[in-house]
Length: 101
Image (tube, rainbow, N blue to C red; front, side):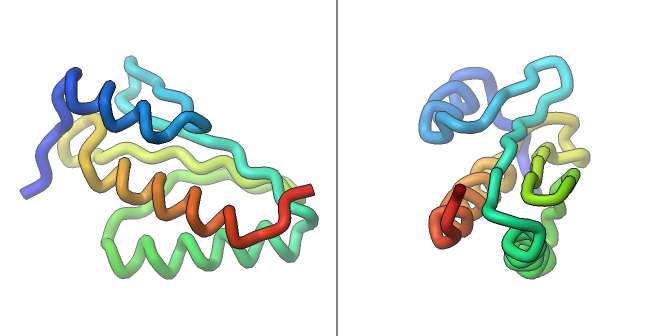
């Protein structure tokens, strides 16, 4: 069973994700990724989608041309869980493999 992160844990874990913004009211984190072009943005989204399916933890996202905004929250606990933190780290690592403009 997935557990909601308490305030102390979420603060400590979010410190490891400096590029992510925390929305405390919504219980979510988000980040905008800027890639070189649409093809690269789509490839990045595909990589995240495959991993999301494997983890059964799916992001909310928005894409316009070379920009991808990912929002993570765990609906089952109405807030952040370790799954969100892990997925954010995965997205950061995947992004590092692409050439940003």
